[in-house]
Length: 180
Image 1: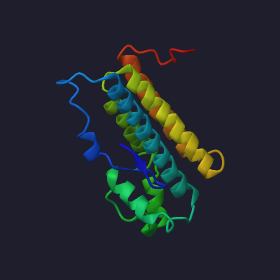
Image 2: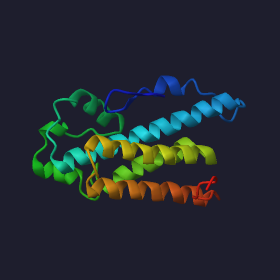
Image 3: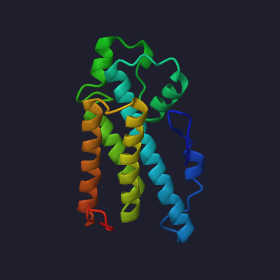
Image 4: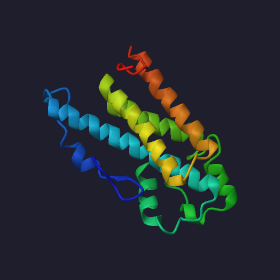
């Protein structure tokens, strides 16, 4: 699974089928390493794209036209089937980023966390790679934004990290880095 374009759209279905079924075949160390890297990259992209979308909508950035096609594709990939973002009224956009809106803190953090949790299964290393990818994606979004992202993005990442940390804790994994 690789990230393509400036908005990080995935090409996952074809490449996912190339991963061996985890319950029927033993994976080699190289295959495990590749899967971990894929999880990390995809978690990074999901976090980056989610933070970018929130920042764009909440911050009133008018750069919709430049990346419109990639943006619309990404929206469809994450399940958004609403009115095209560029055609939203201010009220409709505000509703999308409200606490429980599609791009609000609750739904966005849940999508990010679910991606990492589902991708990790019960594998501690995958959890750590996915968590690291979320944090890296958020940092990259901040760099592209030119500084600290809006509060909604900060809260979303905090909540997504909490969800992943809780899932790790529930599986008996320490949320602290083993190398510290």
